[in-house]
Amino acid sequence: MLLTSSAYFFFLAGVFLLYWPLSRYRIPSLAVILLANYFFYAKWDLFYLALIPIASTIDFFLGARIHIATDPKLRKLLIALSVLLNLGLLAAFKYMPFFLENWAKLTSTEPIKWNWTFPLGISFYAFQSLTYTIDIYRKDAAPTQSLLAYLTAVSFFPTTLAGPITNVSTLIPQLEKTGRKLDPTDGGRALFLIGLGLMKKMLVADYIAENLVNRVFDFPDLYSGAEVLTAVYAYAIQLYYDFSGYSDVAIGSAMLLGLKLPQNFNAPYSAINIADFWRRWHISLSNWLRDYLFFSLPGHRAKFWPYFNLILTMAIGGFWHGASWNFLIWGLLHGFALAFVRWLESRRGRSPKKLPSSLSTFFTVQFVCFAWIFFRSTSFENSQKVLKRIASGSVGFDNISASLWIVLAIAIAGHYMKKEWFDFSRDSFARVPFFTQAIVLMLLAIAIQYVASTGAAPFIYTKF
Image (cartoon, rainbow, N blue to C red):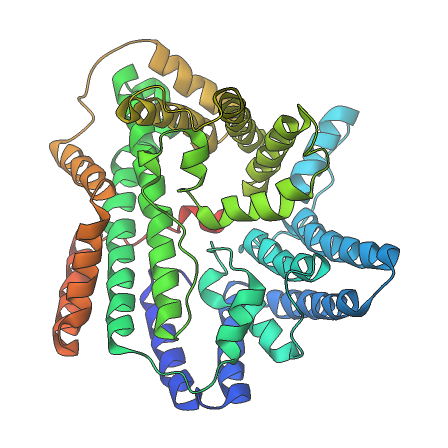
């Protein structure tokens, strides 16, 4: 069930109508959301109805045992079991075909067939689940006494497909709070975010993908070097609008239930360096990698070890996106870039702003777009073809229509819109009467149906 489908919005409306009459009662309101979570998983594959509850229950009891354990060795053993459980889920149901294929290449044997892969990636679930047990191990949070609340928080349906990765210990108190009421202003803001997310996804991201990016990356040799380069920049725009569009719909869906999810994007192509980029791009993931991986690695007091840890962290972050050498290369590129920025900061004793901020932003965007080539390409050979075609220097734009240039221009302007303008638009929409909001959303739905007549493609990050 895609978050752009009519089925999802009927589902969301049903959850909304069931939840709020019961919101005064803790157990029934939690049960409504938990059933919604598991129904959402089941729409992808019934196997998840066994996998997710069992894994979640194990983590719940591990967290409770970690909290009361006093023996350091026992606590380390318990947190290791939680880490192995969640990483084991990733290895078994996402990465195993990659491991088996490469093992077969190394040993010159026939690859073993592995049929235990499923349509819905569990990367976001695994990282979200680990926030709970690691927080308890570090004594940053206390475990909940309610299995129902934990199961509900760790499998919250808006975050299932592509985040934002939400700290379970911060979501549980929101879910357990009874007597909440949906403020009309928050409801209007939620609808605004959902509408904005649909526009980003279906009117911008899908249009750019269908009319340029997919074609060029599939057959780069058929296009001029200038067209391929344009497609690389267009992919940077597509990916931002696709993923931030998902985040808007997810955050808006949670707001309709009175819950707040963390911000996930903040004008990432305005960053002045790669460190700043990761403070703006996929914020929930970058925070997770920093808080739960980078700070868990040894050697932070050593002179050069933190640079290695940065590179290792981003390499793991790259591989988390998918079982491909290209994702590893993408992660390593960002890891080395982050290490370089850290080295500059240590030498200067301040943020590296020697260049004018506009030039710093320009060079940062160039690097990010270069790395996106490996992120988008289907294989290392495909990325080589793209790079070779760009290096050919051939110029021509016969395959790029005027309408596509217009969409790209609007998308770029939208990305660099001042935050004050965005807040004004959102709050103005939230203040108008409900029937006016409904009319606007109906007109938007009609416009999307007319323009995006082929339907919406799956969100890019749902496959990670």
